[in-house]
Length: 230
Image 1 (cartoon, one colour):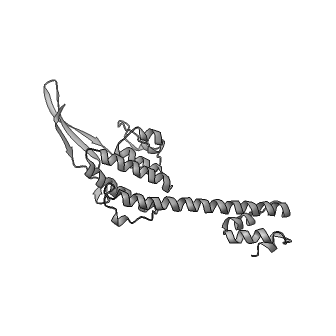
Image 2: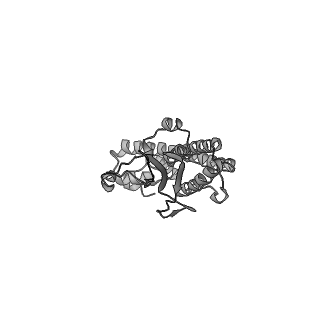
Image 3: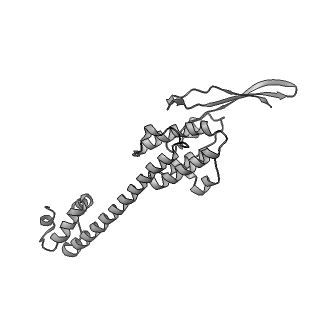
């Protein structure tokens, strides 16, 4: 192969996404074999799957070979050994909807971009993708101001940091609510026996003030129905 003849061809065969299109990949190169030269083409079909599709081998023609990249199988340790923009994207997607793990993943992908040889182009592409990802997650971040992960990293870190604080606060509040539910459930079980499903449903929907009220009421109530009228 004469790699000086390597040429990238347009592969715009899929609908637009962001300001660009997801592309299939088409390359050609001059190949000389036993005195005969010809241009050969390498066509890589990209299909992005949102879930595992075990029928994929059936959908492909039998004589084609394919390489499956299952990002969900990569652990944080695995991805940490691969300092590439794609491994950074996998880290963000594997972070799920935990703002704290997402913050760590975003910090990692920013560090990878900063040390890469094609920083400006990769920064532009991943910034577009991340804005879409954050929007899907419902992140309360001013996405209109986010133009560059590298240039706007402090602004993004501050916003994600606020989400982490909110997440921790909500976690502590939910923990206190669960403790209160357990207390009421224990009191009810001790006084009335096994708690029925309709009472469990009321407990799950109750706020802290209502649970505190039930803690008092259970001392004087003669039945679950009487107590749960509040």
